[in-house]
Image (cartoon, rainbow, N blue to C red; front, side, top):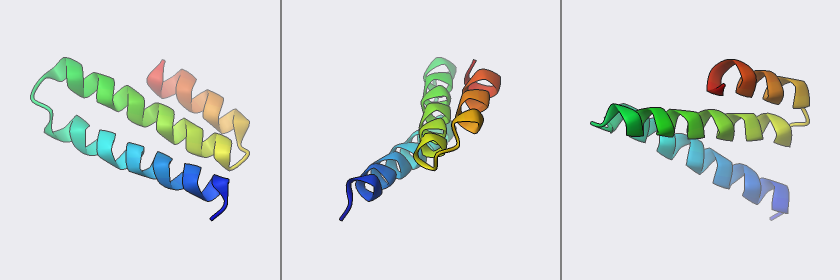
Length: 64
């Protein structure tokens, strides 16, 4: 497997895990932290797909 595919699968796992942790966390502070991590991993997906502008805008609008 190529390294980019491995990075994609790792990012996908991080995104899914933090999305579920955002929903099921009882502490609202932990939930917000998981949500920010999820947003950053989605931005990393954008970078992986060579869409730098979307990644920066995504971080600025949602995680900022």
